[in-house]
Length: 452
Image 1 (cartoon, rainbow, N blue to C red):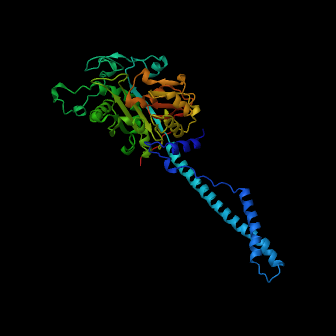
Image 2 (tube, helix red, strand yellow; image 1 turned 180 degrees about the vertical axis):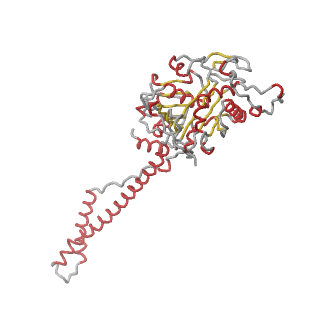
Image 3 (tube, rainbow, N blue to C red; image 1 turned 30 degrees about the vertical axis):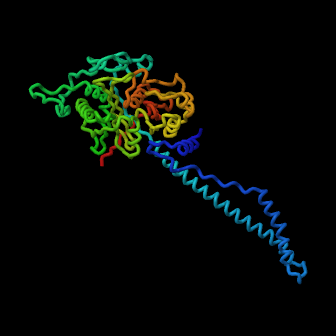
């Protein structure tokens, strides 16, 4: 299925309701008028030349002889002249309808090309970091080994046991490194917390803060390089979190950034349900600043079946400015699409359009959340290779369901795997996006001073 046919099919037959880039105003292409057929006009000529002379004879004066140039001119000329007038009106109407359809389709195609060109602009991934209970292994090793890390564990403050993947209480990943700077108590202020005695020394960071700090460490160098410019060009931070814990999570993120010796970036919370759509919103706002997306999952109380704890962070860039020589592009994340849970193939098809990718060329799919009839939907959208089990990496089965962090985890896994042989598909429930992992020899960028 070619791109333009896919656009007409997806945008007009089943427009996506939640996508900011909406192609449905373009409507269907205007139909060209049917061509002027020979036999209807031949019949019109026959009628004119049969009834035309009859009318002339009936109207001819009886006192004048039925002969001469005037008589024969009326007998032959008037029927054919009437036919030519009718033919002219018919042709003019046909040309008017044809040019109307032509120019409307022309402007429709230009409008679609402009909207699609904007929608196909990617965000570049400058790096990704994670902190997960992987038992000392890397994420790529876990995926290569295809051994699930989920096990039956008890919640921290609850009864019973459930199959999940959470940090152990004494996990060394969450210990305070000896070279950590002191944590200011203002970062961990809590209305329910009793005042801390100043003589007791600086407050120790809790495990959640240490988890977020560990996920930010791989990005610290790039963030510090990007903050050498004026503050107006500093990266912005968006934290995917549930509304009931948003304030607490923002406080933990700020504390983790302080421990990681990062500059005081602007931090905001966004709904956890947005997932990859944070990139979609960032593209629509025409932002030129980099974007740091953080998603942390932690369960102090009960934890549900198949869930996982951890933190994933990804540093994204719109590609508007040159990057410092210390920073390079690791991947290109195209605009995510959202499909209907009943018919996910439409979302997959739109993801291929936004990613400027031929669905048949996608050889790998990162699936982080179960999708009903996923293989059938991928086949229906043209992802014939990615629909096979051998081409799918099921992060939800290996690591667990990390909810808001699923999409970021797939990006981190794809970059760590180093597979740069073509476009890859990220599937997180109803959300999907095309990801291009860039070869390392093509990710270098030149330094451009953007201070103004």
